Amino acid sequence: MQAEIKADIIVEAMEVLVNHILYVRGIYPSHIFKMKRMYNSPIYVSIFPPLNNYLAGVLKSAQELLRRRELQCLELIVYQKENEKLESYKMQLETQRSGLPAEDHLMEFEQNMRSVIYKISQRLNQAPKLPAGSCQFKVHLHTTQEAFIRFSHDSQYQEFPWLQTQKTESQATGRTVYLLPLARVDDLGLKMDVLIVN
Image (cartoon, rainbow, N blue to C red; front, top):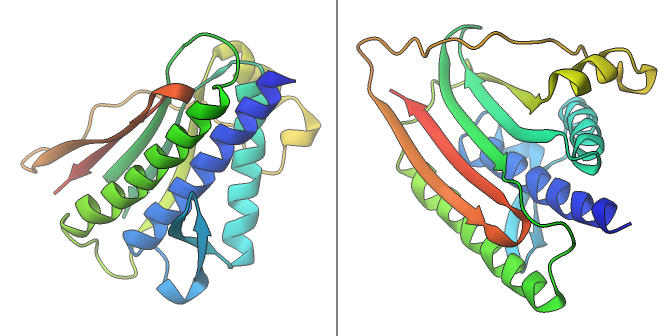
């Protein structure tokens, strides 16, 4: 049961961060987001059904992988052309002791999440603007080979395709690459970095 609760907490944090990044970077028009309070902080969440359906499918898969301890990283990739990555946001999960954070750590977790949301807003508002209306995003779930095979054959996870990606070197020839460590939430073993190619 504790693994399920911990997975729920992490997936909720990932959902908040993905929505906030999409809003702050202007990947979708601001009018499809509504302000909500979470972690005692204002956040923006999508009210656009196609986007919500996509995110729900990704997060459902992430939650199951977390419960099985097979999720290594959730990566949000912003691109203009399929092979032209502009930004990459990696939420990495680090192996740690099992069990839930103690009650006092949940307060610390909430404070860390407030800090993360603030840092995302501050740091990404200073980043170069993305080309208006021409950017898209996709989410990659990094997992084990065994989990990939199991999920790609499980009918309840067939709402979107499971593809095995090839590791490619960044095609940033002649472009500046920025790596910004955004946050670390030690109690849950969650670390977030952003790679911005300009």
